[in-house]
Length: 510
Picture 1 (cartoon, rainbow, N blue to C red):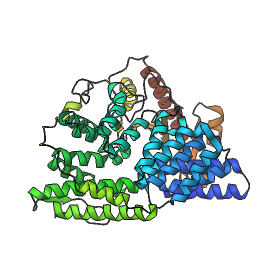
Picture 2: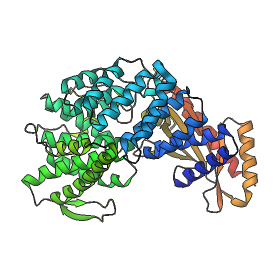
Picture 3: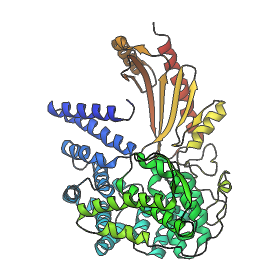
Picture 4: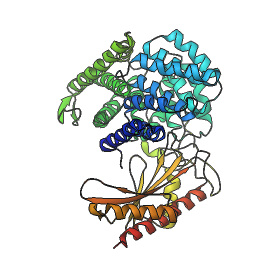
């Protein structure tokens, strides 16, 4: 079933039935799939209960469960809807069960909780242990952990140390497809404070090209807006606020919404100081209809959102840290006169420019970069997928999330990068022909026979509830250790050939 509330409800029903029957394996599978569904949907706060149920049903030292414990604590950081005691219970389990093996992961999570509630001395102590700890797959992407550390240091005003932590990511290609844009965003304010305005400007333009539309990019928008405010790019900042307002209606962590609203209110306040009567076209969002409003009015609306959420966090945490942090942001002023920003078009070519203004071979907005040789191994990128289809001469479209979609005869096939690090190639085919709901038994028999006799690993029946059955199939390939373009071409070609054959077999049914 496609992601959505119907699928969530069905997974919850399956998990409850399996628990009632004492079927721990099926219950664990269903709760695990709920965790992944909420991650994909951007509603991390909803995964806390499924994680709790998974912990009850599985072995405590399972690596997946250790990763789920991290997700649960990160959910706490993103919303006030989860109690502190619940997250501390998850941490206690990690400490009791893993001992030294979990030391770095526990240090990371305790550091981030301490910072969240405003206990900077404790956060600094835990950060030292975190940085000294051994690598742990459950702790998260190794190329993203330095970004989190740099964000903490920048929040404490340790600009130089933050840049030192980021330097390895900025000076060499990274294996994570979120880089270097995530690292560039983390470096924006430290570079501004260090007097490197031109370098920060290039990094902002490059990183925002990706973050402006990528679903996972919403959390970086507050940093881009603060850069515009402190760098003196107020017109650009107002444009970004107006452009991004509709995204507030999509599921996002409350922390990201609060920070976006506060940074947007800052931009609007500064812009209103020189042009109080400036009018912008505010798109509809949050139940508010589209309207012509002044930047002051828009800023007041955003300030109300930020203030309300900060108060909710502080009420849960028992501190005033989040309200104080947002107040400090709103008191910020430009650091220096703005320097010209590079044109966005400068980053359109394959030889993108890095933060120093020199041609760069690090991954671009879709995780691509300088073209790899056919047998050269690198991280999976959208460009690898589209290049494979281009060589076949096939037509396709690519949406804002990087999903590649095409039609081959009776088959509609989509390719996307799945997984926390976007290192899984997921191909899904939907047959054009539908069957009447009354033919459910026949449809199941067809899929069972296909799964037994053919190469497509997973064929299944989906009932959208409109009286007709959709027959679909999918192939998932884990490429965590890298893949060469020639290998991607083979995988794409196999998915297309098998998908076409599958759709043709469905069409040939009586």
